[in-house]
Length: 500
Image (cartoon, rainbow, N blue to C red):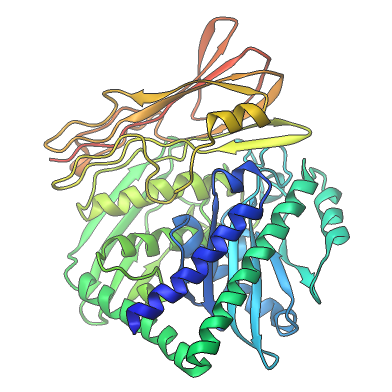
């Protein structure tokens, strides 16, 4: 029965994802599938999810828990809320979360939630992924529990007002509205599917198996972490920041301690990772230790003690800029955790974020790279690794909807690290712009190579290049430039490090 309920809950989240993909309007959600869906108990604890975006899934529980504390009066009335605040469980501002309650006799029993990356949510640059933001308000519009669905009606006028009133408003508020409606439809499907399960098995039986699943996850991870001995590792990012971790199983308290003391303090740039992002990486890391077919679940954290210094780059204070922390720092962090335990050499270590647009639109994509090798396994070429799991926009879709032409998308040969088991190769992506636009790049591993165990077996770093009037110029790992019609961007993504 445990396996049956695992799959029943999984199917709820999966159905939510299908509805969101099919009813959304933006390329980023419909084609790239940059979204995640999950269900939670009445405490906001993660029950199950579909295999969407890892960085979303571990963080959403913090959002739901915060929202329960602050907005329980709204949830008790059946109101759905909109949230994206990184300092209360959000990841970064373009990731909008819709939380909907499932009520029985005016009492909330479960929550359905989804998180989707909107192509633009305001801020100082198109695409809401600025390279040089100095505070959170420069990255877009902040929602901290906006009542979006009240008495079955979407608060369209109020939402559009919020999207337009900022100093740096959304560049396409109508598209935001359509995608938010799709998110609401997704949650509605989740409510319908979960009600079917409750009707068939009974409320008490379903609740028992929610608790059993959490307990099962906790017991499985407990047996695994008992075998972990003391390990530590530190590494720098391209911006000079250091992430340091010590991992040790404390037999006295029977908990795995993950300690980030020695990590760089809060940064002035936007590579700060909100606390929810850091926790999301850890819960994903713990899930990868398990081969059992079980859902990502709150039970993974029962026997884990996480120590993160306040006002550090992994636990920044408001109003720190954080847009790159979600996409870049998270990728560095998971590599460091894996190398610390000799599990896997570093992958390409970045999401290779590019955004371009003007006053009327923003386009966003992440680009794959090389997977790090591990004991007995070569790394895979040209894949998204770890915290990201999106698709790349099809060339036909990119060229039909946006003023851009894809000139090349190929394997970057010999970019993976050497070793007994070789690292995967990165890719080369070349895009020509067909009108004058603003271009932003957020990346990493352009200066520091993806590393293997003991920092050997390194892979090639990535490169960002711009071609203007047949002259090629190397761009920094983060940059914000104007491009003209006929200019071309080349992104060469890093490979994965080798092993052995």
